[in-house]
Amino acid sequence: MTDNEHEIEQPDERVPKRVIGTPPPGTSMLGTVEAPRAEEEVPGVTLQDEAKARKAEKIVALCFVITFLAAIAFIISYVVFQVGSPEATGASNLALGSSLTVAILSLAIGIVIWVRQIMPKYSLVQERHPMVSDEEDRGVVGRTFVQGANESGFVKRKLLRRTLLLGAAPLGLIPLVLLRDLDNTKMPGSQFNKLLRHTVWGEKTKEGKPLRLVVEGTGQPIRAADFNSPGGILSVVPEGYEHDLTALAKATLILIKFRPEELKSGVRQNWTHDGIVAYSKICTHVGCPAALYEQNTHHILCPCHQSTFDAADGAKVIFGPAARPLPQLPITVDSEGYLVAQGDFEVPVGPSYWERGDAEAEARAKGGQA
Picture 1: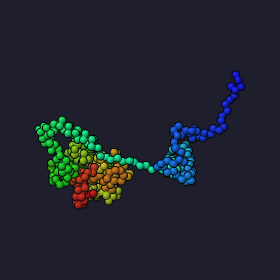
Picture 2: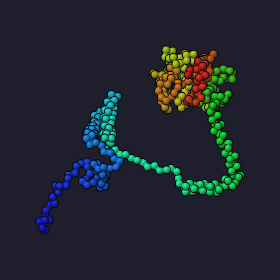
Picture 3: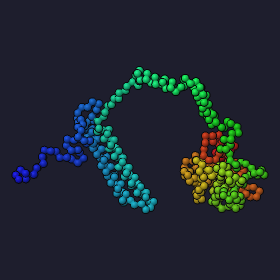
Picture 4: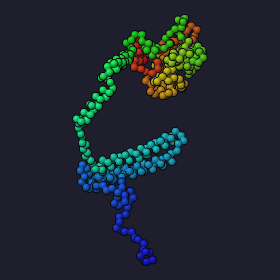
């Protein structure tokens, strides 16, 4: 073994040292493909001013350092601010939200400045060609169309052609019929209007008496003197329609007992009896049963989409997607002291539809609740 074989190869000091975050010497960030240098003139490329680019580089670096510090602050906040009470939860949310906002915002600002003030600007030109096909292509399309028409027999077989036109003619009239049917307000006695605008509360019994309010499920009539606990609530239906699902879909009520001083201006006082108020149970958003009641706040809640109504103020909407109050039903008592309906709702119940405005205008003209 010679002395040369025991010699250890020494590194070439002329080879530049590699810095962390940079590619190996002689390669680019995306591989070994050589890209034009920034200093070289490239058609359509405008280089940024070097002095401004260096200043922007420092700003970008500062933004990235802030991102780093804010991210570390987020991690520390997650460990330090423990959640155990409303106050601690609020402090934790504030610390986590602020640090994360600063981190993301500074990162975004740095990237935008990098792109706009450091990277070169490109001028691109897109060539547009004529959109018209040449004569040969148009000739091929024309011949293909004529060939298909001949093969289908549309021109040759008159019976097929005429019966096709005969069958298609009424189809063109169908949209006209449907569009005419949308304007039901101008059709006297329209069954459509009757179904949407009225409930069975406006009807009478066989004896000509107003309908009584009965408890849903049991059918028990309600004596006003027995429903005397403030804060009480009942789900009621019209007597005689306890099993008519079509009628109950619009006529179901919630009955609430108030103290006289709890009622506000939104409630029609002449539609109540001894602090008892009746509202439609059908939510005015999409028709879910609004039957959850909070006695302390007098709020009626719809469980489907959290629409909330103030029962002490005419069931006005105070939260949620519902656009109008729950309609109030006028009630009174009969000669035996049972709660009965004075008449039907003055405005349509349930979700809004395109013709409801006409009915509410009529109600306002009569002094009804809008």
